[in-house]
Image (tube, rainbow, N blue to C red; front, side):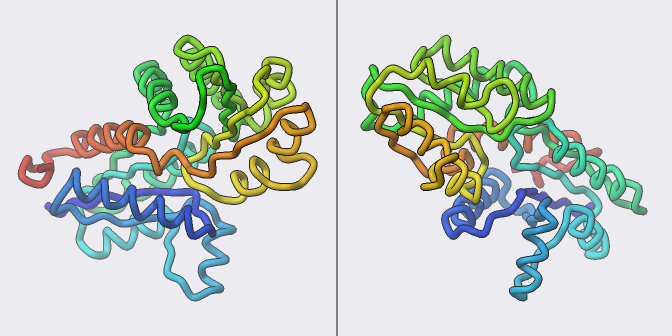
Length: 265
C-alpha cells in the first residue's frame, strides 16, 4: 500500500498567492510526515498559462492518473475551496473517475464551509484574524465569491454566525443576495476594513476587491463616504482557517480503506 495526498487549488498567478499555497503545503507536511504531497489546479485557464510558461502543472484527473502510474494505491484529495459549489462538484467527479482506475482508492475532503461545525469554526477564525489595528467600533467587510444556491446558503450561515460574535463584521459575496449594495447601508464607521473570503490572493482580491476601478468593492465603499482599508491576504494564509481544511483532510485520510496507522502519524 502506498499513500499520497493531493491538494487542489483553483490556482493563482500572484507571487503572494503562490506563497500562501507553499505555506499550506508546509502545514500539511507537518501534519502528515512521511506521506507524499502533490498539487493539482482546477482552473483550466491558469493551467494553460502555466503550460505556456513551461511550468509544470496537473489537473485533478491527470494528477490522480500520474499517482496511479507511480503505484500509489490510496490518495486523499483535499480541495482548498470555501463552499461546496460547482467547482467542488467537478473535483469530486474527477476523483470518482480516478477511483475507477485499477488498484486506486480515492477519498475527498470537504470544503471550508461544509457543515454547521465548520461554520462555527470559520466564524471564530474570522474574529481571530481581524486586523490588529482595527478598533471595535469599525466595520469590517469580507468579500466571498458567491453565485449558486449552495454558496448563498453557506455564506448566509457564516454571516449570521459572525454577526452573533461581532455585529460590525459583515460577510458579502460578489454575486447573490449578499452583494455589497445590500451591505453599504449597514456600514457606519468612518474607516471600513475590507478582507477577502477567498483561499488565496488572485485577480478577485487584487482587482474586484481592492482595485482602483470604479466598480471595485474598495472604490464603492469609498464612494459611499468611507475610508477603506483593504487587507490583501487569502484565508489559506491564516492558521485558524487552515486548521479547518486540515481537519477535513484528516477525515479524508481516515476514510481510505486499511490505511496503516504509521502512515498517518
